[in-house]
Structures are given as structure tokens and as C-alpha cells.
Length: 233
Ligand SMILES: Nc1ccn([C@@H]2O[C@H](COP(=O)(O)OP(=O)(O)OP(=O)(O)O)[C@@H](O)[C@H]2O)c(=O)n1
Ligand SMILES: C[C@](O)(CO)[C@H](O)COP(=O)(O)O
Image 1 (tube, rainbow, N blue to C red):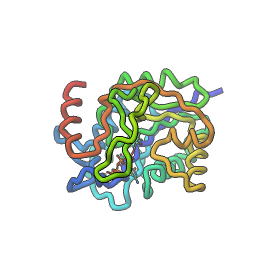
Image 2 (image 1 turned 90 degrees about the vertical axis):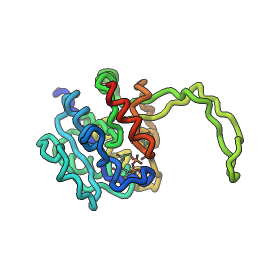
Image 3 (image 1 turned 30 degrees about the vertical axis):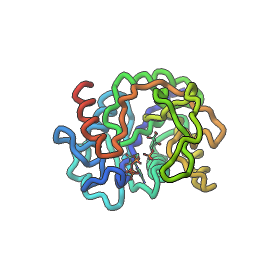
Image 4 (image 1 turned 45 degrees about the vertical axis):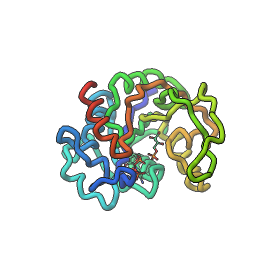
């Protein structure tokens, strides 16, 4: 039986509303490179992907100015309203090339600080696993559940001993992930990551501990932090 291939999906069709920038955050620059280009190079240069699909917004007019648009390992497709729609669109675009049992890794375009060791560890840990899983970081802060007051007040302090922050890449079998996402979207069950879709289909993804500095650039203060982290990777 052929060894499964590895495919990469990097959702990049968001508008970066929380970043309040003049362009979608994946096209902000660190050391004069688009965040999207940094992210894609850190993935494609550190693992044996058979191909890469990048869902883009229909309104994207930055891609053609990117380094990555010249990389023949990378294909693009049109993303969707939500992140899950964009990921599913990428899986549909890869359907003729990928086998059901191939692995697909999904990584946010907005996470440029992924360490090569975390990528290798995720693949090595899960490549024989029946379901797959995700990079995640144990919660290090005390967590409070807020009431709905304005301003919010503490309703409860949450036991954090078994709480983890989901990161990316998230790594699942191609056919299973596509079916899980289709099921979620058909039933109107909104999900913010691939693991949630797999959980909705009854699976229990593995949590693989990753570096907490695998930052998702989300709000303005994240840009300088990402630059600092990248300077030390
Ligand atoms: N419809 C969408 C929404 C998000 N994403 C991508 O999913 C990743 C993580 O999403 P998030 O951090 O929420 O990005 P945005 O949706 O752009 O941010 P915001 O919620 O602030 O608008 C990003 O790389 C983003 O480009 C996507 O491909 N398609
Ligand atoms: C996929 C993710 O990065 C895992 O933490 C997160 O769910 C993305 O959420 P967002 O609201 O789309 O940024």
C-alpha cells in the first residue's frame, strides 16, 4: 500500500478586521516580507508536502505581488465567508489530486512563527494515528468566566488543569476532514478550527504540545511581537 502523501492548506482569505490595518493582516510586512510569504516558506521548506492550496478572498489584489505567487508548489482557490468555508473550498480544489487517506495539514496564514521542530514533531507523532490531531499549548494563565454585565465581572474561575489553546497546523486524513467539514456546514454547526469539525463527527483528535510563541497575528500589538519572535527562531 502506498505511503500517504502530505498536503498543505493555508487559509488566507480573511479580512483581518481585528487588526485594523490598511490591508488584510496576511499582507502586512515583517522585515519587508508579507506575513503570508513567511508562513508559506516556513512550512514548505520544512516538510515534504506534495502540494499546497491557498484559499484567497475574491477581493484579494495583493497575491500577485507575493513571492509565493511565483512558487509552482502552490495553487490558489477562492475562499469562503468563514475560515471553515475557505478550508473546505481548498479541500474541494484538491479532491482530484489527493487520496482519501492522505494527510492534510491546515495552518493559518496569520501564524508566521511556526517552529520547524513543532512541524516535524506533529507529523512524526501523528503519521501512524487513525484520526490525527493538532498543535496546542497548555493554558498558563488563570482563566475567568465572565458574566454578561457591562463591564463584565467574574462569574467563575475556571479549572485550567485540562485546558489547552488550539494552535495550527491541524493534521487530519483528507477524506475524513472533508466529510466532517461538509457535515458541519450542512447542519449549520459553526466551527473555528478543523479539530472542532472532527469532534463534531465523533472523533477525538490528539493534542500535540507546541511552542506557545506560535502566535496568530490578530490584533495590532501582535505584529511587533511576531517580528521579535521571528528574529529569534
Ligand atoms: N473567511 C475566512 C476567514 C479567515 N481565513 C483565514 O483563517 C486564518 C485565521 O483566521 P483569523 O485570525 O480570524 O483571520 P481573519 O478572519 O482575517 O481575522 P478577523 O477575524 O480579525 O477578521 C487567517 O489566516 C485568515 O486569513 C480564511 O481563509 N477565510
Ligand atoms: C484555527 C485557530 O487558529 C485555532 O486557534 C483559531 O480557531 C482561528 O480562529 P479565528 O477566529 O479564525 O482567528
